[in-house]
Amino acid sequence: MNIFHIDYQTPDLAKVYEVGDILIKGGVVALPTETVYGLAVDINNPEAIEKLVKIKNRPENKPFPIQVYPLKRIYSLTNKAEILPNVYRLIDKFWPGPLTVIFPSLQPEKFGVKVGIRISMHKVVQEILSRNELVVYMPSANPSGMPPAKSSEEVLNYFSKDLSALVISQGVEGIPSTVVDITQNPWKILREGTISERQIRQVERSKRVVFVCTGNSCRSVLAEYYLKKLLLQREETRLIEVMSCGVMVVDGIGGPTSIVVEMLRQEGVDASKHIRRAINESMLMGADLIFVMEQYHEDVILRYLPFLKNRIYLLGEFAGDLGPGPEIPDPIGGSWEVYEEVFAKIKESVNRISQMIL
Image (cartoon, rainbow, N blue to C red; front, side, top):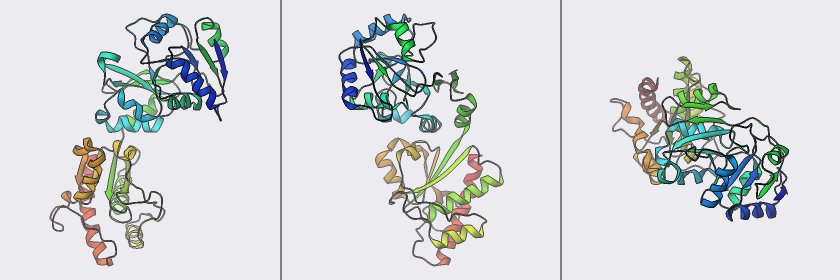
């Protein structure tokens, strides 16, 4: 058995590739995570999987959890288009981290109808998986029915004659991951670990609303902060997240126009510290409702994420008879009066949609 000491903060890449090579060639490798030690094998190596079943003494009909890194690798295991917004918010909030999520399987003939996936925050695991382009089965390092190994010494006590390699590193806390089955409604907590059931249920019950315009300096900002005001009045801010972004923005540079800041100030809302945000997959995938100001904003989103079609609406469709057509025109560069007309249409629309989301 090979033993590798790999520093948590600055993993030695030569050792990272050597461990990856052992996995690719069918070895069983004990790896540290931020929770407990796990036993890793390449999911594409049947002989390695057979070794793991034998070593763990685990029933063959009980599937192993899978470790991946980075996030995009989960889409070979579960359908991206079928991940519901609150599920995406769950993994966005707690991954990388001590959370295993049970998804519907994209390949039931290979993995069964459900597949358990985790993304560890342990840098050594991340480097081994990403640098070697590996997806691994990685159950906890213990024979079935025994406590998970919390240290390299415990791993050796269990498996000293069975492993191809052992990686020793810092950062193992000894508390197993929380396991959530999101294929059931409500979600089923199969094991409560570092992440509490209360934290999981908060995400499950939550909602996200995203407003989209061009530059995230006027229309979407007015809509975001006005809706936040309404929700605050109804004490609904805890479970409803409101965000805004733009399709033509350099992320993190600049803020709202001075007229927008003043208009919202007159509404009793401070938007002076708002930072402009560009659209991104994480924000939109986690949104239950996406409101755009113009049709071309929707077109930009659907170019990259076409399966979001049923979550996108023109905000102006909810404005009744205010203004011609469902689009809300860009007031940038216009007078106070132009902004007032636009804000009136936004307020009417937001007042109506606030009733939809409560």
